[in-house]
Length: 102
Image (cartoon, rainbow, N blue to C red; front, side):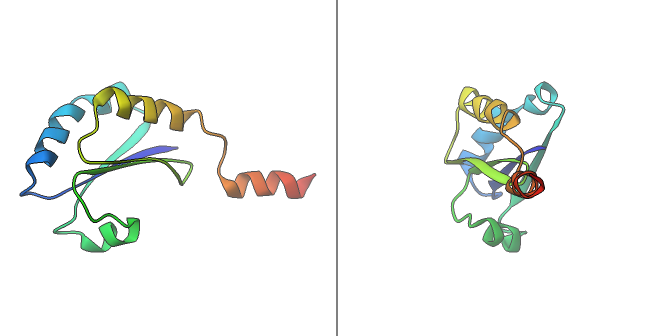
């Protein structure tokens, strides 16, 4: 599973620009989970992911971080990261299970 998390805050002008750049991306990638986290209202999640600046975009594949963008990310770069994440091999736990079963 691929997940994209955008960390923002209400008073961040660059965050508004990033939202505009991302507009419609969810329709292009229906199998990807997109989330937005406002670090002012959900500081605990921001700390959990180690995010201190906004906008920050994190891309995960099978629970493993595959890309991080701090600041505004071009749509083409984000789409390339999403597509690359979708092609990632299974997560570490799955790989270890495969090795152990041999």
